[in-house]
Image (cartoon, rainbow over all chains, first blue to last red; front, top):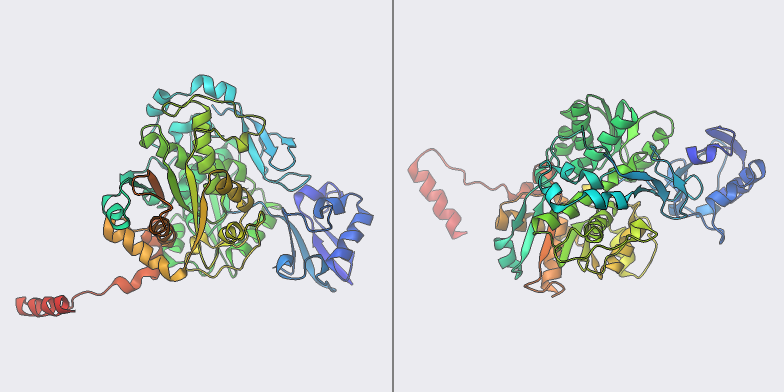
Length: 91
Length: 427
């Protein structure tokens, strides 16, 4: 099940400059693991040592903040759009 | 000139050049400006500040932009007023109002935007942009007009009319987003990644946020180079709250306060705390969007985002970027946080208007009700020097107080007038 992941500038060095990638995954945790396989070191940037989403990283599935959904267990399906967005903005 | 060494990640300490960046490449932590305080301490003085422009640029030595040719519509140096009527009502004998509603675009946002716009022009940007709850859009559009650059401002579509017109009048590209502020902010973060624009509160955020320090400097200067015992502040992202505290501590560490010896800033400039700074920092939020106050009052050190549902739209940020740092400031200053019941906000607006002749917006209603709570509970003693920050103008949120309009309807005759007056007096 292919989802489109939008990559923010701080992570584009890892994706060879790509600002979006297609990933096969059924939930966010799986998506992160798949990205880690393709781009080693990717997971560490998003997830802390306890396996939780880092405080300064926001992830949205179809525009919805996953902290209001099931976090990294939020399911994804074909055609979904996932955005990884630095949290430090606004105000 | 700007005395800036670069940027540093507040979380992991990685260093970056002074460029249009706001987050650490590694940990996504916020980047903060690093100053050359050693050189600043050689040039800055009370006398030098006093002789400076009647705007935030009198503090240019402590701002991250070059003040020689700032984008300046005369933000700042707003009145600090002894609040006799309000003080009497609340039982506070030493109360002052920092009236920032009289800035050129009618909110404190002119301070931060003047700095960000100046920096954006320095960097060579041709477009100034922002994600806004309203006041910021007005200020960005106004400063872009002054700087002769383009403006693209993004707002939630349900904003008050006064804020929408207050931004549109400067002829920016106004983008009305069908969503909450947090959704606007997320969209703008993605746009900022793909367009060569200076988003004042995204890629320019480290510089922008520094402008709020001037709210601390001015109060200290206007009080005769001393600090208040208490400050009461409305909060959304928490950025302004933390920067007022930083401003107080910079003044103390640089020896600019009366009777205070200078002190080293230490290894981490952003957490420097001079022991002479004993001001207690009180945060107020609206109950319909109070993620920081809720975290503080439940003993949390992290912020749980919320979905805002408040009439105080300028404070309606459910996912506050500086929330955790604001919590630390409350803790370090022995301060407090209070979530004002929604139904008290309009009462707060009326209280300020009726006692001091100042018409503030809903955020001002929040801070007024918070102040009243602190006075009523005895947290602020009657003779303690207290400053309450009024950060926005009531003409922008008229919808909230339309109920006050109840005129005597009369015919143009003395008889009619006297009849109606008599009826009103008997009500």
